[in-house]
Amino acid sequence: MTIVLIAVAAYLAAAIWLAADLGRDRAPGLRPWWWLALGGFLLHGGRHLIAWQHSGAADLHLFAALSLVGLGMAALTTLFGARGRMAALGVIVFPIAAATLLAFALHTPRTPEALDWRLQLHAWLALLAYATLAIAALLAVMLWLQERALRRHRIHGWLRALPPLVELETLLFRSITVGFVLLSATLLTGMLFVENLLAQHLVHKTVLSVLSWLVFGGLLVGRWRRGWRGAKAVHWTLVAMALLVLAFFGSKTVLELVLNRVV
Image 1 (cartoon, rainbow, N blue to C red):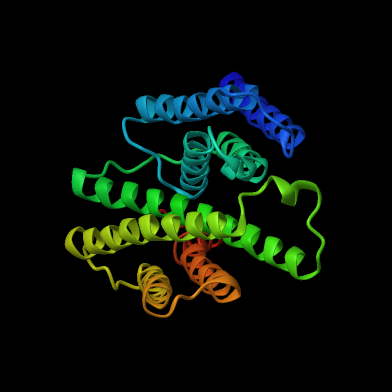
Image 2: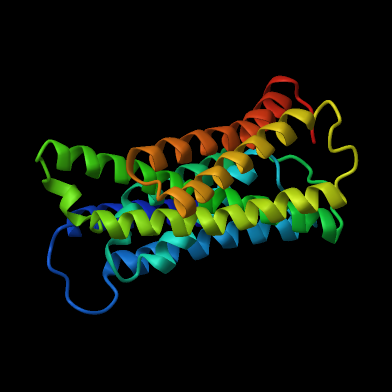
């Protein structure tokens, strides 16, 4: 538990330091918040490795999966926010990572089921896709807030610390593209390696995941063929992410917490 508390403290300190740093002129080089975030990220990952060693298999149940997605989001923000104004995302991402890690540590652990390499590949691809597309969803919210502030001529406070509108939109679509590729690989490995993909306990997850994939794919095609941007891009991104959250974490919540079934 000591590792968890230190990681949570590091994440929160990084978010607070980053929030205080926003909008200020920054000297070249890595800022103190980055080292705090890196420490939190490494300890966060270490906590999962320790649990993996003790149980002999990776725990991918609800709270563990949430924590791993939070870990992925923190890793992406730390790595790509080291330079440039994408770092502003850390004000939101680092507390989310801290909360998911704390929930994982406090939840009564389940005995994880040993998975062969094919199912492990499918699971890790899914977690990477969720983390990447969750970052895209946060970027979409930032894009919406920035556009609304511009229309009202009220750019002030932390909005000044965000990347310019065009750069933010570019970051959004790059994140969606990478996430879409990972989600495509997740669905492909699911079709190849998961038995009874349309069984009763998996059908909701499968259908909602495919719907999310179609929405993200439609958005990328619309961007390529018709130059979709702005509010339309934000709405499509958030709808697709909502479907994805329902597909995985919605179904896991019902199965594990309500029906008390381990899948």
